[in-house]
Amino acid sequence: MSTILSKVVSKYRRLVAYRLNRRMVSIETQVPLISFTFDDAPITAFHTGGNILHSYGARATYFVSLGLLGATTEVGTIASIDDLLRAVNEGHELGCHTFDHLYTWQTNPKKFIESITRNKLVLESIIPGICFKTFAYPIGVPRPSVKSQLEKHFLCCRGGGQIPNVGFADLNLLKAYFIDKRNNVDIESIKKIIDHSISSSGWLIFATHDVTEKPSPYGCTPHFFTEVVKYAAQSGAVILPVIDALERLQLAKETRIE
Image (cartoon, rainbow, N blue to C red; front, side, top):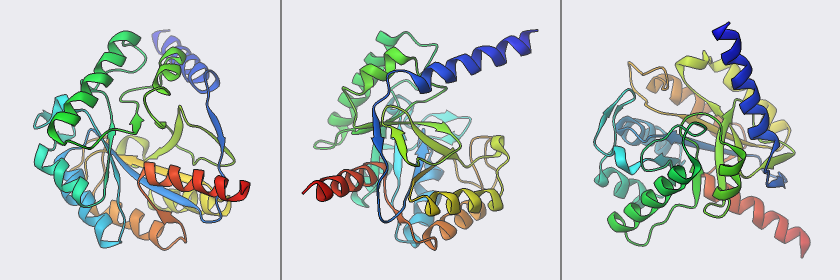
């Protein structure tokens, strides 16, 4: 019974998270878009994942919880301030992931916003002139009340869902496709989702955590990540950090209006 109840609760949360307090936009782009994102920002995401992307001329978005810097976690050792600085200098984007890496649904909304504010203030103190423009929910889907508050802080917020953003998308809860062991993804599944997004002129956002030979359930191996990036680079899509992809979509709309 407990398993059944847990599934019902999870389904209810996903339903209300995706249906309420939406900020819908049309995904209209002549050139399909792909973004690579890393949650928690372990060192391997910067060093290994970043180097793989760099070899294909691509940049990523790193969603960071600055309260975890240097900590040892289940996805490995989290990056240092030097890693963040190097990423910014290389053209990568830093996105917000709350300061404390909080559970999204279970956390009191006030505490959740306070953690976001602290993360933003700490970033401003360690890297002056840099601010968070995008956000990724750390664990689980958001309460509708949290979604409505976050649109005051960020241009867009990313979730999960294992599908691309095609046709229309909710900027308060963008879909993403996780590349990790827990989802049992294989390269053929990845190729199919890329092909689908390309044929639909969509925006496909990939997400993962660590990139290492012995990844956590939330990460993947360097070989697998390389295969994904290689296929994405050869697909005809433009690979951009989340904020740059969003700006390209907005620019395309403004150009058509004119």
